[in-house]
Image 1: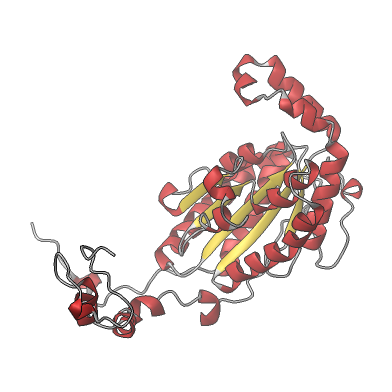
Image 2: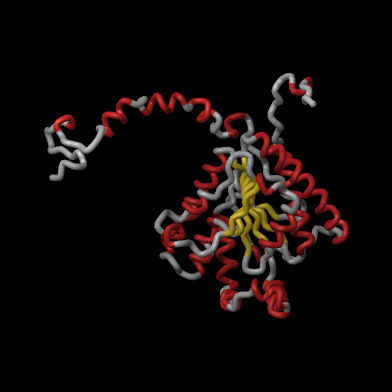
Amino acid sequence: MSKKHGKHLPGQSNEDAVTDGPDRHLSARARAPSTALWAGAADAIAGTVPAALGGHSGVKILAAPGIVTVEPGTRVDLAAIDTDADGGLDKAWAKEALAGERDRISALQERLYAERARSLLLVFQAIDTGGKDGTIRAVLKGVNPQGCTVTSFKVPSSDELDHDFLWRYHAKTPGRGMIGVFNRSHYEDVLVVRVKNLVPDAVWQGRYRLINDFERLLAESGTVVIKFFLHISKGEQKKRLEARIADPEKHWKFDPADLVERKSWDAYQQAFADALSRCATPYAPWLVVPANHKWFRNYVIARTIADTLEAMDPRFPRAKTGIADLKVPD
């Protein structure tokens, strides 16, 4: 056995071994013990205690009228939910009202960011052309990008596949004070994975429970989770695909594989219905948004986000005493 790395035989003390330099183990022991290091970080650690433990638990998701909230323990019938529903709203009025809801979101997001105690996670799922990108652009326009992150989940990389299926999603959840947006999400692992038979049935079947546990962990750690399913009809998808084909400036958004995926429409509807039914919980409800009318979709989602942020009631931190009396020197 080489002695150049300070290795020693069983029964031989480290002091008897020959090394090229100072004993790294001894120098490590000379530093403060790990328990002392933890104690020294007490203030920082205390600051990460979930806000839910500080009186902020039980924030209710306030879905706007026209949105269908999936009740926990019930079976979703997507065919029974009208994708053309518009809540009886006037299109011109809703477009104008959207600007007001965006202003509310921006103002409340500033308070959330300043408070730095909780976070908000917005999950968007839909079939192809369902409107995830357009919704995110329309609803979050004007929000300070410093306080908002958007993550689009594509086909997992080899590194991501080397970890558990939730690993890549957990790494992108919002930190305290942030709004996080998932364009597609952890539900892909019970949707596309299921429809395309990428894993055995027993694997994706077990993931519903793990997803519920994951979302409960987020909720109990101070993250409010809102999940939107953008519900469009098969006829509406056909119109949107044809519009992309007809417009050269939209060709970049069109993938011929979308036409292949369209053949699995019924299988995807069943997969969505199962995911909504099995993962609708009091702490992370599923909201089904009739989404054939983009103007209606945008307004009700923006109002839901604004109302929920208002229910969270984020507060600006208390200012240091005496600031109002300070004078800025010339």
